[in-house]
Amino acid sequence: MSPQTIKIIITATLLLHGIAHGRAFFTLLVVAAGRRTGAWIPVRSWLFPSLPLSTAAGIASVFWLLSTIGFIAAAMSFWGFVLSGEYWRQLCVSSAAISTLGIALFSGIWPGAPDKRLSTLDTLIALAVNVAVFVALLWLQWPPYEMFGK
Image (cartoon, rainbow, N blue to C red; front, side, top):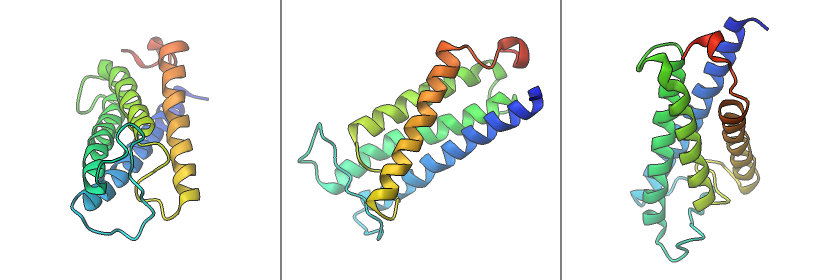
């Protein structure tokens, strides 16, 4: 696979992951405002199970907002936009860590999913992408710096 194709695939993956977090963030804003969304969103934290729904949604929205901004900024920085290209790896790993922490604290939900089955699937996909980020960037050191610079 050519470096250009790899670059497009990485960018598209990061952008889609960021957009998915963004959709969840906006759903959480609606819930935090006390409005019904029609979607299955039992926003609960195992750490603080007695939090009211709107409070839990407000706290969870911070994790999804930071992940949204981070993944989209990482994708843009990968091409040298927004920030220098040397920062995309840090943005990506930080965003994956924030996303994983949010998923862990608010386990069992993906805001905006129409039912529990799709919420679980969306959550598993998000975790898989986060794990792929950790493995590729931290363990395998891939893509190599020589291929895309810093």
